[in-house]
Length: 160
Image (cartoon, rainbow, N blue to C red; front, top):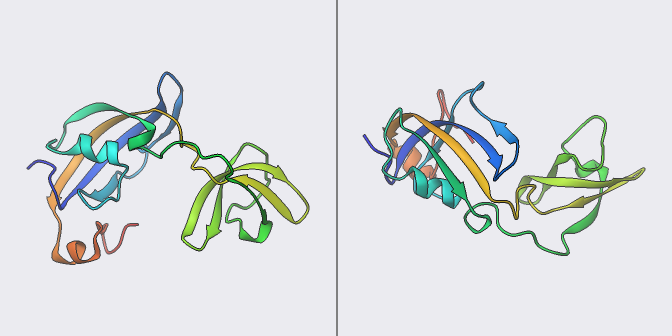
């Protein structure tokens, strides 16, 4: 079976910035699960998955336009600390989770005040050319429920 529209793909990845160090990896954790063709994955990675098979390993370079987009000016905001999902010691430069009207989103912490924080709301990987090392673990057809919901479900239910 090959990756095609509405197939559910399990894969491991290692992500680094082009010419840089590793940002993150799923290799020591559970594989990532998504449904092909539903926009649940960045465009460049989803395009590279098309037609791949189980146990296939590959590297793909993803430009900002097909990744997390370009950095936008004017995305610095002062918000109350109560909107942070990240707990513990806050240090400028760290990636934090912010509770927004669209759900949790990542931002870069710029400044910490007594009741407020300043953040850069650009995605931390915006403007970066990314290199993914990928290995396909499993491919299966999506269930009718997954197709109706528009995303893959993990073992025992939803995986978001």
